[in-house]
Image (tube, rainbow, N blue to C red; front, side, top):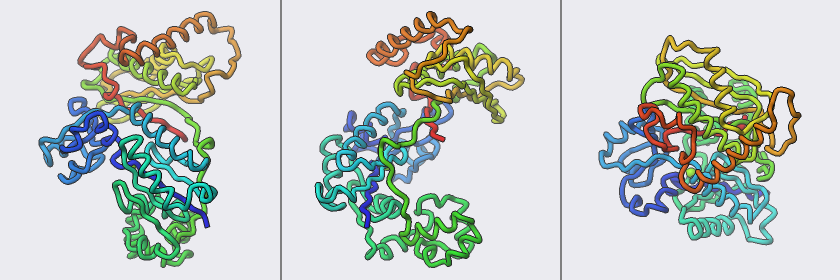
Amino acid sequence: MRTILHADLNNCFASIESISHPEYRQIPFAVGGDEEMRHGIILAKNDCAKKFGIKTGEPLLSARQKCPELKVVKPNFELYDEYCTAVRNLYSEYTDQVEPFGMDESWLDTSGSISLFGDGIKIANELRRRVKKEFDLTISVGVSYNKIFAKLGSDYKKPDAVTAITPENYREIVWGLPVEELLFVGRATKAKLNRFGVKTIGELANTSENFLVTQFGKNGRMLYSYANGLDMSPVRKLSQAETIKSIGNSTTTPRDMENATDAKLIFNLLSEQVCRRLRKHRLKGSVVQIHLRSNDLTSFERQMQLNAPTDISSEVCKAAMELLLSNYNFALPLRSVGVRVTQLCDADTPVQLSFFTDSKHQEKLQKIEKIKDVINDRYGRYTICPAVILSDKTLFPEYDPATVTSCFKSH
Ligand SMILES: [Mg+2]
């Protein structure tokens, strides 16, 4: 029988913010978007805020109605990424099979580590103690014999707790839970199962597998095996972690973008951020994609192939502007835009020198970007940036990275 752990950092973003601001621990506190920027939602909250009924994903406005004294700070994804990576590295001292799930959760297969470190519960408790001591963060850990039950275990009791789900006790612990607690049971699947009178995981487990297959296709078989603890899917090795397929940023501006000059400011900003992240991951990309959403909320995407892969902001911005100008006439103002770079390759991959690119000029730009990174890392993000970014405070009021949402896309 395998020993699988699922470890989950509790209130991750809010807890990380509280490390440098211990005073936040005592008050209702949340991490969220900027209220004035029109895209403010709660991204994470502490237990104190939870008591007011504040939920993740809730608009800041409604959170404020529940708790007027709620303290909200803007997210700092780079900082969270650093902590989550460091915690994962700690996990990997116990097994090379560490599979990240989202930013702050991981599965560990410790089946082969028992003779070295003890059984699953012992390892789980050691991780819990070490994460607390070394990072001042808490985790909840589920210990089981498959990934699905391990995940349910880490949700079962938190914060700072370990729950073991075994072949002996799983009916008792798991089967009474609502069916939507099961991984990958989304809103539609839940509604359909509820229509058949299946409300708990136990009821799902006792539904005929054939019936589930007729209703859900091959997902029916998956649901049946998940509920009965028959999931056999392996925990991937950290080195086999999904590679990043694209890097993009998008933003909703404080006021609508009325023309190409407005859009150029924001494309410059987004290209700076996207390329900075490309360089941080030692990647280059050869396709630039833009996403446009007008103020009637219709949206579309356009993309173009570059002559050679790049991580240079000015090149990405130039491509983004070309796409914009040939595809949009500003009959309607834009409410939000995004820039994404795809078809990524390792930054060191040798490239075919093109007749059309001036490689000397590119080398120069590359050097400038490197120096820019060093200075901005040290003195703050927009210490050196294209002046156009700072030219209109009604579009970009402050040089604050958190006004921009960022996301990795791996498929
Ligand atoms: Mg978490």
